[in-house]
Image 1 (cartoon, helix red, strand yellow):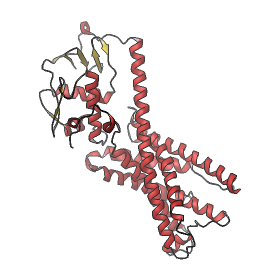
Image 2 (image 1 turned 45 degrees about the vertical axis):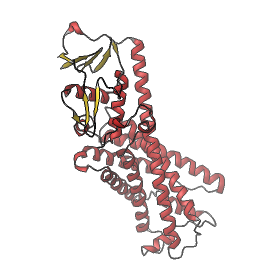
Image 3 (image 1 turned 120 degrees about the horizontal axis):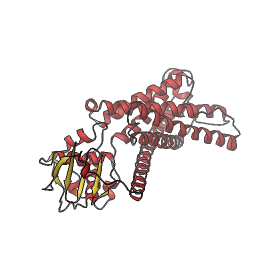
Image 4 (image 1 turned 90 degrees about the horizontal axis):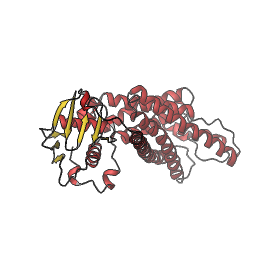
Length: 378
């Protein structure tokens, strides 16, 4: 395996280290892969498509992921994007490593061994890696929560409007914002839990596969579901004196697992899916199927829970019975329950899939070091 020397830096491909004047510099593995790839192809201006296929072959990401990686590499190497010494931006194409005197040599010579990490450097490296992991998980979970909240609110508005025109409905039009708020809340909590689980699994080299993604999303979904379950039961008992068997943990576990399986499938079929919207549709289909399975097992989602509360609460006007009449049922029967549940699962899955497959780093918009030449069109 080769070792690269340039300026005051050494890149060891065997030990996977970046060294500057004898000291190790912390760099997350994917960014080190990018640096090594640019060094390997230093005689060429490498097209960004080749970079995505080599460095991000296992996941669909946007241009912002590459811009972020280039910016971090430049910052680590002390490079100036306006007058680059190491990494040049090739407009509408990609990037090239431009340092003229790169020495490539075998990475096996014991006389040129890389200095051992001193405890202080190792500690700082670990701290930065943990901080980067927490930032990545928080950012992804927040994004998924926001997108799922918006999707849930939209579904609530659509459901409220549909309910207001259903035969036999007595609920006022004011029911629309109520359902929108409920949908937004459920989407936000579910998106936060599932998003955090997916992001944590995706950040781990051992869990970055379909099984790992499913486990992470399932854990996050179950946690969010149990939190909602406890909050709903406590609220209903405290405010209305209702002791209803409101569930959430199992539902969150199943929907989270479905989201992880769907997202993992899209990552595995990256070349075939191509479009992030198509990928989100795949996640939506898997989550919709999981929601149908829950309904058939007698475990309702948000719509079914709303109907249960309305049926038990005196004077409630949010009963979903009129929706059943739209599909020819005398009440909120199995067909209408299945349709509502499939829509809920599909909307949630699409939101989570879209949030992860069309990820855009907030830093790309707020970091002053980001320049126009850092953001090539894809």
